[in-house]
Length: 83
Image (cartoon, rainbow, N blue to C red; front, side):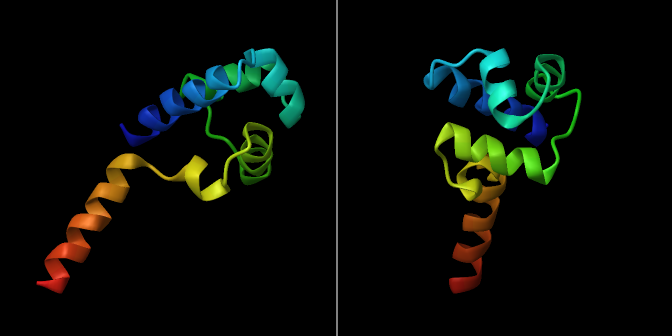
């Protein structure tokens, strides 16, 4: 579930930079088909390509890989511990 959310967010980042799948794939060092499989959640990306994606999309690696749902869970745990 969380990986699917990440994949949708990856597409949104790509589209916000007005890049096609092919343009982004070539910039990262992947074939368009391989990138398409990553964006559709059929293939898990490796660290090298993840790092390159963050660079091309002009994002911090942490921002690219963080899952919104996990972040919310961590914040709830911190609040629970502090009270």
